[in-house]
Image (cartoon, rainbow, N blue to C red; front, side, top):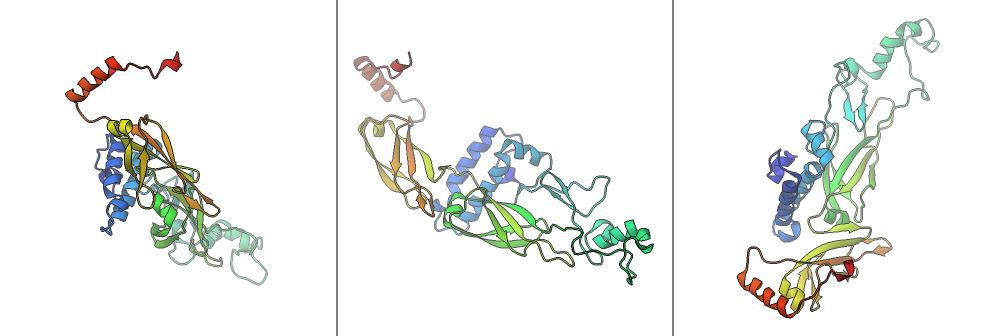
Length: 320
């Protein structure tokens, strides 16, 4: 993925508020629901969400700026303590990989067996480590050294992808890329296991690939269990006079009737418009926010002054 600052169009010195504002504008502009005739919109939207996952998070942003993680949030290889090479960085520290075969990626270019032979060869030759009748200076027993060949990677999906499922490409620490089928209804923290897609080592069955799912922040919706929540901007006259307004959902937009004299902060429930999971269907909760027009409006100010003189009231009287 490209540099997340470049994706969001902000400077590295940008404030958290500037980054948040840039993300919201881009997410709204490139949201797939607003670009149904553009086949590349979903990819751009996913890239924007991934960039925000890095620089929109204070800790991950610091790690990225220090070069500890890459643009996809994966740990960068920092080298072996003492200057060696040949392993890969893993969560919480170093994870060393030993591969069998000539010229493999193990320490010093040899296989794991070669390394142990160099360490224990003399003892093995004297009879301490070799089986009778074998000339090999060191051997492995089936119940001896355990090898963990599983690979773990993180994958961020959009809210829409988590609900509807789909195909997504993931890059492994080995550099290999795979197409992964995202099942509908996947949740944050859930793991997808791909059997036999992990690392390989001579004499051992291949490991598995474990993909941990996270859901990118959505520009409109917030997840609350099976429910979704959204803040809906309404005008002053819609709040006073009432009317019908369009509300986005994970499907097509619906119309919501706003009653007369609706205060900012009033919440409406749209049944069945939340997340759909086996045995449970959530709702969408819509909270109104009255938004005044930009700039000074002399006519509106004059109207409010007249109205205040004729109809004074105090909504904070219960606060003491």
